[in-house]
Picture 1 (cartoon, rainbow, N blue to C red):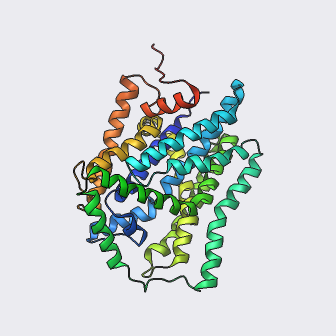
Picture 2: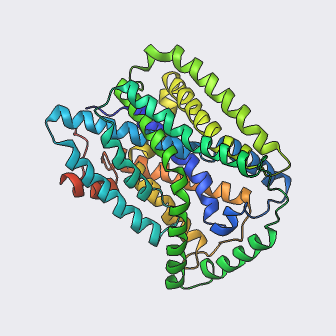
Picture 3: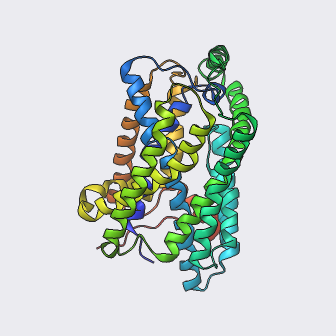
Length: 387
């Protein structure tokens, strides 16, 4: 089955947004972030923070999750066509992903998403043989569960969900200082110990998002079974209409949370669990439409996308060397505008590296993709056929 170029490009596009958000987690305490984050100072930083929250945070990880579900469907259809038993193949694939995630989370970055993907991804097996309509219904139900329960809980317990009167400034300052002593000044063993605790905490924090992640996985499965990202010319009008509706609705639903002078649980819930998926779908639709018209220009995203697994881990390797004491030790030292510039610079470097890897070294997949494939299929690197 031939690679679908727009999927590779979408994956590369998603990795840019993921890096723009994840890099801030290398510069701040997990506890500080969970309490609202280190205060933002200066108009430039405030503007970056606003537009990152509106347009980037959460949306690109959801896009990555969508592509995970779509990719699982492609693998399922390919295995079925070749007469390969899919379930044992997929389980080995998820087990290998889980091991990679543990290594990543413990040795590089506590915010690893691979372990979550491996655990939640197993559930996809129960849906791949279902009708696409059934999968879509389950996707919508799962995406609605958490916001519905949180909304009911908020109304019954607090009425408004307003917690702006609670001051966490001292706790944020203290946790940032403690983490800086470890991540920016501690030895490797101290950092691994701290990172391990943060990894466990981060993983349990993610449990709340399991239904949303599975719902987005299944949305990707639905698109995959309908082959909606193929033959895009036939779906231009539908993608345009749905993209406009999803983007407009997402922005309207998220703005109240960002413009509110108070911290409100209900508004945050709407922003994260409703507006986020809508904006992700808007990005998906408009990127696909742009790809039809500007394919040659947008193909540069596909180089990173084809090496998506390796590039995701490489982002963590570079950031850990920049922010932790065994590298430059920049943890807590730089501002938002600086981390944003660094993120863009890292992405440009990744593009050059992936372009060299694919175009000049003639590999079709990355080094970690090779190891992953070896684990569950016993097949490694593939060179492009020489002409």
